[in-house]
Image 1 (cartoon, rainbow, N blue to C red):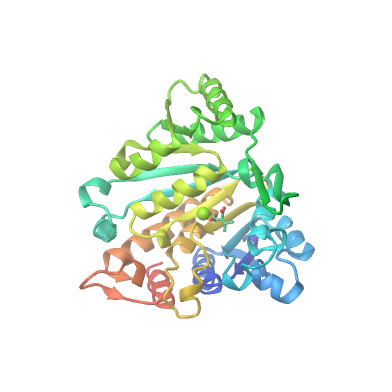
Image 2 (cartoon, rainbow, N blue to C red; image 1 turned 60 degrees about the vertical axis):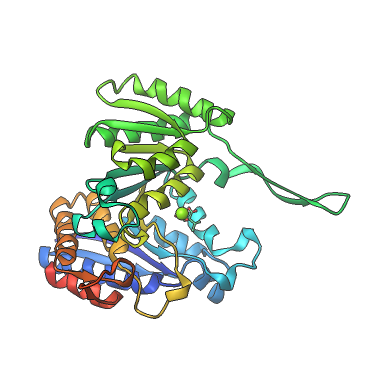
Length: 357
Ligand code: IPM
Ligand code: MG
């Protein structure tokens, strides 16, 4: 019997609820296909701060590094917002990404036909949208130094963050983008702000160089402001979008909304030995503990884990099919609900998907 060790980090807010449902899905798949998923749960983010005083303990980091993959819920919330940046819940996530070498973040935004009406955009604009946002995850403004806020002699303050990219960092993410595009519609849009930011001028230059090895893939370039606009104007023009960390953070939220709800989008963070899988949405503290959260993004993140970390293609397909068929049957959490549909909570959605599997 095949076995995989998985670190489960539910985190804060709705994290425990959505991860709870995703874990049930994982167990169901394991039972059905005779695969052993060895699950180890640990605290991360605010939950870890409350118990241990820090958002990521050495023990958790050790567990994660010794696992085959990581499933994460969400971190952060108003309770910890006053804390110094260096010890905030979000730090744990950034440290995990960095420590595991997860430089490539894959965020697929694909519209389900039955949800086309749930989007705030017109059906004809979003019908057929299938975009893969590839976000660089361990560089740029998030990690560059110098950074921080310093007091000036006149009593005012000065805040700094630094956007840094080196040639190898750009090369490796560009390669991933072209490789992924080869398995899709063979079109990469590299997003930068090369008309203003020197860092991203280098980004463009290196992407063009890497592209020489991928002449079967179409490459075009877009400034980030234009891309934000094009995503709303004509999202179907995009196949793979590759971009730096901060731009990717912003554009992937935007791409998510094309699909109706940010509660639908999974993600895979790859590049190191251990992959990390998480929904792209946050901890939604306003609805935490009310059984209202949509667990689909997390459940689809499990599917990505099976596909990318374990090569369990059939099992991943089964989860994705189950989600689609539950949506086709009219089950909806509040974020994607519409008149005449079957409104369910987080648990109800999880159960419906499990019974479909
Ligand atoms: C995301 C989130 C995180 C990020 C936060 C929670 C640190 O917004 O994964 O998109 O900015 O990367
Ligand atoms: Mg984000």
